[in-house]
Length: 114
Image (cartoon, rainbow, N blue to C red; front, side, top):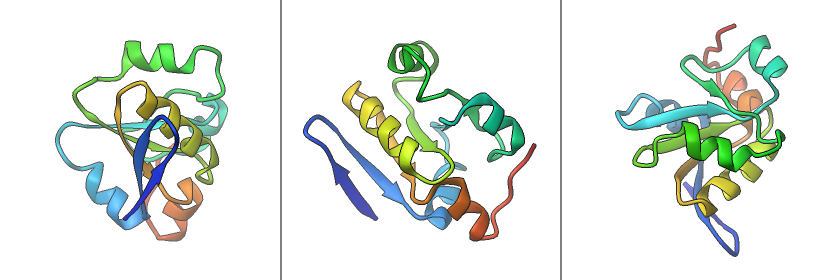
């Protein structure tokens, strides 16, 4: 496990195998931070969609996400989920980020749904 730190927040980035275990735990809320069109093309089962590039992302996250749960975050390659992880961690959420995004998830042979 690798810890990523920014000046305001800390979150954990994990490989697909570890991420797949984490998202099965109780009190973990899974979000896909890609554009809704990308989410519709395929996503990890059970993932809610909350576009990190949309205006008011953090405010919407505060309205939708359970503060007490761990938030598991992913995107296509890990770039946008890294941004989302920093923003959400700075807002007080406990974050686990998928290293390499959905590309790495699929490369590891893990399933997606449409």
